[in-house]
Length: 226
Image 1 (cartoon, rainbow, N blue to C red):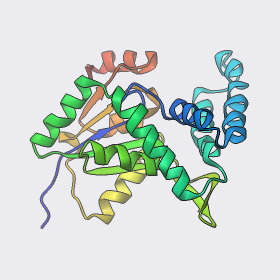
Image 2 (spheres, helix red, strand yellow; image 1 turned 60 degrees about the vertical axis):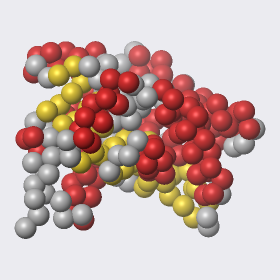
Image 3 (cartoon, rainbow, N blue to C red; image 1 turned 135 degrees about the vertical axis):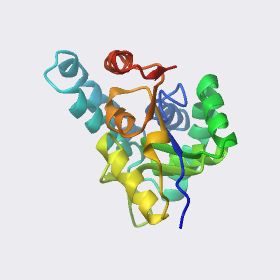
């Protein structure tokens, strides 16, 4: 019989690291003059919705979900090898140097105590795996990119690793690995109220530099706040 495990789930952008994937990709694309049209199109099309979101004419959930769902447009048409090379550079040169010291210390503490660590992010699966490998995180789950003819199509494969989709992906993964988890003794770390489903899912939720909504909920429920 498999022993029941504890897990510690970490979000990526804004939680484990300070910087954000989309900014890193934009900087890389413009610096190397690659895929500028689709990167620019992604940025402009979503910035156009920003005022509507601020005026509450577009819900926060839809704003962020569309932002995540369309993010693969930035690598649309690129060969898989080329795209993965860019993601590796972004991860190692832009994201990892902005890792949050206090959260990394929590990660290392869990690893030392034999807790299974999981990096679960709406960012690309390919990139999440690179970050996880660099930080010795046990498992990496992200949003998968659709590929056709050895090129990225610019589409994400549903479900997105976002909100309830994170739980869906983690549950499926644990089932495939035949891992039994004690959720009451497990941890989840996030900066965003969009991760409330997964924070409520575990017994030890931790709010990291939380947004206003998450901060209020964390205080009300007496969750740990970093």
